[in-house]
Image (cartoon, rainbow over all chains, first blue to last red; front, side, top):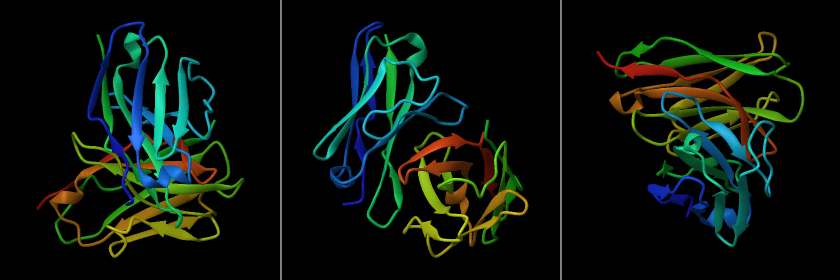
Length: 107
Length: 119
């Protein structure tokens, strides 16, 4: 099916590690990209490809993939990482799709 | 540094056509292997991909919106545009334009523009 499924909400203690997952059939063939969105702001790309970070994204953000699941890991979560996170992928026709988003709370 | 800026009416009447333009600055819209997308987000909800265009004119559209969407590009103005016809209140959202690369990610986004569909 052409859907990407994310947990609606995840929490992590300050300084701890959190994994945000994204499931979908398209992920068996195509990489996910991950976007961070804070309230009132446009999304920001944090991970793309196998495990690539754009310039300016801290190295505590990393990505991985296995089968139909892609994961975004934040190692040593900071207060400023509290945000919504969206995965995105594509299908064989070139159409993109987004996951429903995960709200990350840093406790 | 590439920048994208959306522009267009903030209020559209039901059944009419929503029209937005994205102006690209800091680089040519025709350079590189990029494509140009529209993405929207209703208040309090998630992101929805609308469609994309290459500067060759090749397009892809979200199947759920395909019958109502047209994306075009004007390389002379470094702009691309969105038209969404027969709008309803369900089309009320913040609309973003974004640059796509590698076939699978969006590296630059506009700030977004709120479009409200209401009479």
